[in-house]
Image: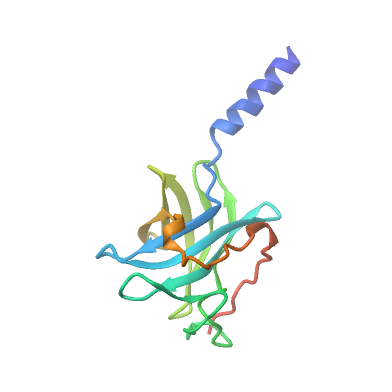
Amino acid sequence: MKRLLACLLCLSSLAFSAEEIGGFWKTVNEEGKSQCIIAIYEYEGLYYGRIIGSFDSQGKMTDSIYKPVKRAPGIIGNPYYSGLDIIWDLADSGSKFKGKIVDPEHGKVYQSELWINDSRLVVRGKLLFFGRSQEWLPASAHDFPKDFKKPDLKSFVPAVPEVN
């Protein structure tokens, strides 16, 4: 009987855990244009999000972790956008992952919630009761330049940015 209860508890905890969010996700703006690719990776039980590259107005990746160009003015030290962790300390809270997200342009840090909806990653930044959501798409092979080598997400170590 104890074994049966233990099995039922394990199965019920799996039913209430959030869907897997790790991988490469493409952000798009309100006009449907590709903005950047974010790698969501797991490190010591928490999830983080790192900018891998960004797109120009023609939809070509012109800035990447291998050739960073643009800098994040809202982050101390003015680091490159590409290679910057903008999401950190995401913990599974049941149906969602909750943590922090930064606006690297302005240096504002918000509470965040991420979850999967219809194979899209919903990313919500919140300040008190107010918030804004975006839907990110799974990045496909054609979103990356032909010679781009996807980084191994298991090799990433978090680098939480300091804001101004």
